[in-house]
Image (cartoon, rainbow, N blue to C red):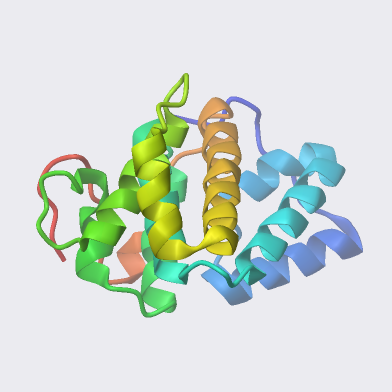
Length: 191
């Protein structure tokens, strides 16, 4: 399926910088850039916010990555899930766990903390959210207030990104094919 808003040519000095940065980080220019190039301010602000969020360091990076993948799997954002697998390899995360995020409830590879984080990500993503006091208390006890706030904000940002891409019809680009982690569905998928 083609994006619901057609891609446009990324041009100009800023466009060449964006394309160069994308190729350096990912090996190619992601499809969302061509779609969002129609409104450069939205694109640049989104990129800035994502860049700043990636620098937050109170919560464990792998927990945030798994949470983002859980949101992507629940919302149905193939692009975000695919990119999440690619980033998991580049960030030296546990690839066996990354491949199992979409089916985390049936998988036995996750720790109790990781399971709570995945449950929290899904509960925040539900409409309306279904976060319970008990789940929040368990996470707060294990993570502490700063990491809990960061994790919550990161999951909220993940919802923004995944829902934006899904609504615009942006699909997987095959980033995960460059690594040992297959793009997992809700069925069994192992590296």
